Amino acid sequence: MELVYTPTREDIADAVRVQLRHGTFRVLRRVLPAASALAALAVLLLLTSPGGPDVGGAVLMGGLGLLTLVLMPVAARITARQVYAMVERQGEHRAEVGEEEIRWTTGVSEVTARRQLTPRYVETPTQFVLLSGDKGRVGFAALPKRGLADPADVDRLRALLDRSITRM
Image 1 (cartoon, one colour):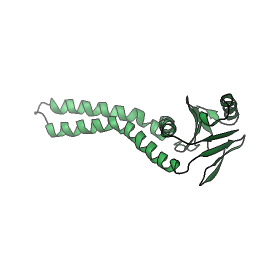
Image 2 (tube, rainbow, N blue to C red; image 1 turned 180 degrees about the vertical axis):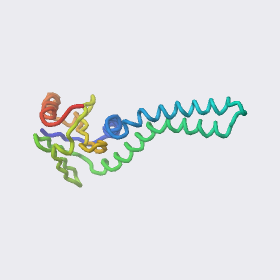
Image 3 (tube, helix red, strand yellow; image 1 turned 120 degrees about the horizontal axis):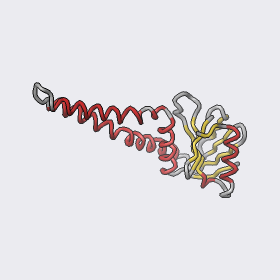
Image 4 (cartoon, helix red, strand yellow; image 1 turned 60 degrees about the vertical axis):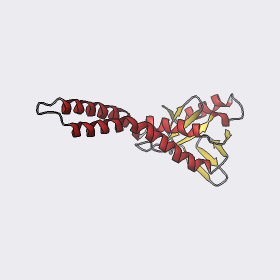
C-alpha cells in the first residue's frame, strides 16, 4: 500500500500525544498529578503549622506544584514543535507499507523500517501511529489516513497492520 502526504502540525501533535500516552512519559501522567497534590498538601501544612506559617516554603512548594501541572502539556507542545521543524523540511512523504517493512521516501531522505522496529500501533481518527519496540517506546512514525488514494484503503491498511504488528 502507498500513502502520499505532506505532514502537518496537527499530524505531528497527534502522534506526539499518542507517544506520550503510550511511551515512557505515560508514567508522568500519573506522577505529575500526584506530585502536584503533594505540593498542595505541603503548602497547607506549611501555612498552618503550629510554629507559625512558613510563607517562603509555602511559596516554593506552590510554585513546584504549579510547575508539575503545566509540565506535561508544555512538554507535548515543545516536542511536537521540534519534531515538526525536522519533518517540515522534508516536504512530501511517500510511504510504502508492506507485510515485512515500511519505506518512507522524501525529497531528502529514504528510510526503511522492518516490523521489529515498530511492533505496535495506535489508530487515531486521522492516522495510524506506529510505536517503536524499545522499552520506553520513544520512537514513533505516523501514517496519515488522508495520504491513501481511496477511503476504502483505510480498512486495507488497518488489516495489513493487524496482520503484522500489535494494535494498542
